[in-house]
Image (cartoon, rainbow, N blue to C red; front, side, top):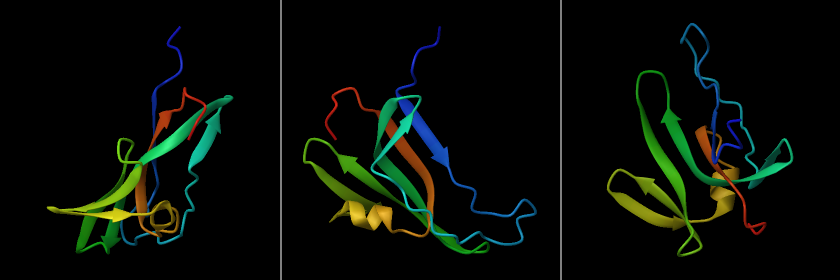
Length: 104
């Protein structure tokens, strides 16, 4: 028995299989998702902006101690809101953790 995984990583397909075109479809991320009656809460999102030839990666990260989202880009970090994460059309990888407290 493996048990319930504590980390759930969702990798969103952003490139066609022949890598000739980037998929720009907006995916709206939920704060919480349920898998087999287990609740997972989003903790971080990796974003790829740009195209096939040039681009930039940044991340949105939840700081549970400060109860605040942060946008991290290279050496710069700034406060952010969940709406920035939710509405971002370039989300690439989403990280969810098992919510055992029952509180999001």
